[in-house]
Image (cartoon, rainbow, N blue to C red; front, side, top):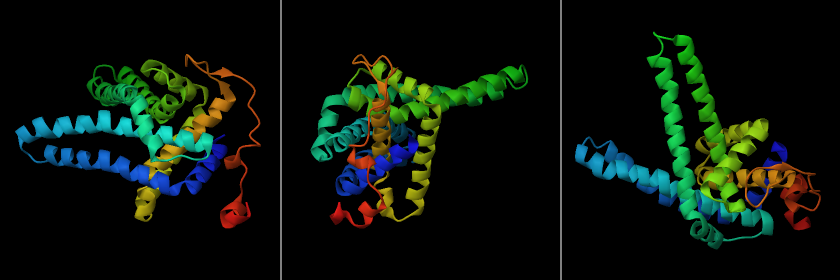
Amino acid sequence: MLGRALKMAFWVVYDHTGKLLAANLLWALIVLVPGSIAASCILSGNPAVQLFLGVPGALLTALAGFPVMAVGVAHMAKQLIERKDGSLGDLFAGIRLYWRRAIGVGGILAIALTCLTTSVWFYASKLNEVAPIVGYALSALALWGVLLVLLTGLYAFPALAQKRAGVVATLKLSILLVLANPFLSIGLGLQVCALGVIALLLPPFLFFLYGSVVMVLMSSAYELLARKYATPDSAEGPTKTIAPDDSQDDYLNRGVRDALFPWKG
């Protein structure tokens, strides 16, 4: 399924590069610019500036700006996959529909990630002399928790945009998808990391597409999982059904010839 998700994502990006580039630039403008200002305030060395400008700015960017834009791009990607067309208007529609829930999802994920990351260090260092085996075991368990949270975060915003469920239901569904498809989820995580490395090493054009490409990839994966599982409207979890035929999906039925000679399609 990973190969199919990559193929679908490639053709979505191929068909709609301009729109996704514009969405990513808007995402960067709303997240990176205030984030950079907040980071400068934190590094200023002035306690008052750090406390009243740096920390609130960083929290606002991380807990509000990023998740709100993420769900907007996820909603736009959903339209591109389902309707084979879309616009920046879909991004703003997604923000209008889901911004409150997106902040809730992002906040819970951020808190869980912070607590688990701290626990990885805490148990290994504080219990090293008293009960090292217990400490390392708890630290390893927390590390697995970090991985689960990161993979859950990859599914969370596409799941929110497609299922339109509440915060808890969205997170529960995302966790179930990770646990039910561990190899696919890890493969997607590795692809996201690989795309990040490529975006940093290659010319800026790919860097300015990175966020949108990741969201298209995860939305494609979610779409394929939705075809594999029947998810109830309550978003209580996936129920196995027979996977539908993908032969009519244009994104899944193109080849190299379509890229080299698009006018012959």
